[in-house]
Length: 166
Image 1 (spheres, rainbow, N blue to C red):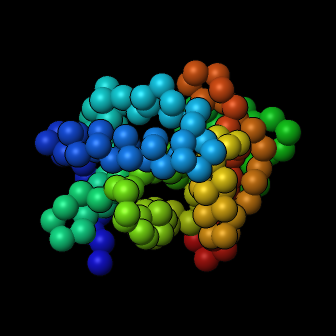
Image 2: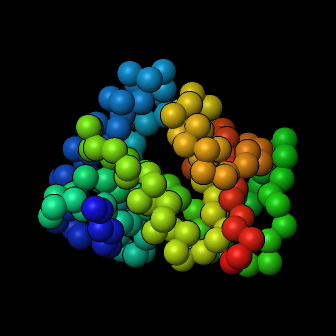
Image 3: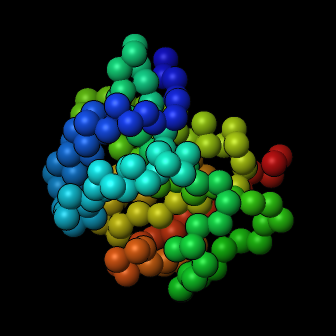
């Protein structure tokens, strides 16, 4: 059973290990360039903690996963090409920097359950080579909406999920 809590500054060394595991996993699965430059960097995590959007997934008092969840507008999602967002009269939440410790399973589902408990309007994006996350998102009801550009101006495939009951 997983629990989720806000990230503490003392979690940062463990998160950097988890991100290193995630980069290795992505490279082994045909996606060596998404986080190839060492992203996310420690300053990204510090910024997320200060903003109150960084979370860790715990199993038996051990940090086994992490993600950022931003409730409200994400500036990188303002412009979308080759598609468009479905109209929704409510704020949305965005999932970023999802990563799990090597050998741990179920982190993405735990993250999704946490995020959908906050809002039924979710967005996420991923690199075109990240087939694992693309499959996860579409298998959980996310719909591909188009291309957005992240901070370094590289393109990402954008996904959205709307829960009718929200």
